[in-house]
Length: 113
Length: 119
Image (cartoon, rainbow over all chains, first blue to last red):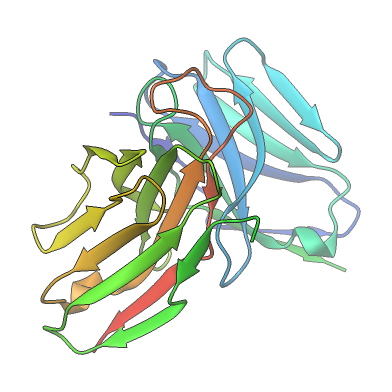
């Protein structure tokens, strides 16, 4: 079964610095990953994704890196802003194509002004 | 509205009562997903639909859980004889793509969830 693991439950970063959130996965069959951001009392919001044909995808302040040999991906936020404070989930499809997602447990990011 | 709408936002029920949670997906979205999120955990898949067809319900925790999407739009998740362990946030998501299609730039869009508390 596909599993994703976020081993850091929380992260605290100063405003303006870089935030790095990590995610490891166990099954390399479906190398497509998404990051979602969640504010309290709201649903997860799609942030950025990456597929196996790339090792990097960038969207403004957000960059996701995929290391297939290490089965590891990371989300970089630079510069970090107080509004980035939220819980970040990495996710991957259960199987090929548009199928239900498997989520990590999330990392709570706090950006301190 | 433009997003996925879920109602009610909060539901408190006594153990043993039946509850029904509603999801209005984004108009035109073919796929609809239900997830359960316990405190401190990520969302976990329950069931999903392509139009009115329920393609997989393997994530439903017990036969007390039932979901339907009779006209391929609005979906209802029903929980019968609720138990305290059913307390969680129930999230609905919809996607433009059909299930099984190649991943594209059409991710799943989530509603704000229903927070269910069983006393």
